Image (cartoon, rainbow, N blue to C red; front, side, top):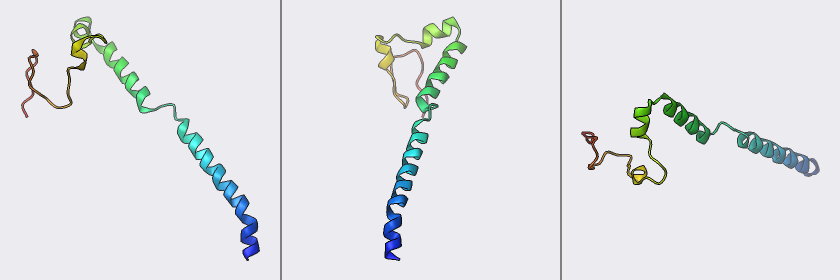
Length: 85
């Protein structure tokens, strides 16, 4: 019995190593990741805006307004009233 296990150890190890490698390749080959989905959603949003909305809602990369945001409402001197929490 021990000789049989010793004899099968290498082929079983190779099989599991190849299976693991195959799984890593399949998982890594997913080209539809979240970054791609965000780009598509942003493009759809930008194409849905009118020119007036686009001038109000799009900031240049060097604009100081581009980094003036937070994920929760906070009081600012913007023209948009803060949300009531």
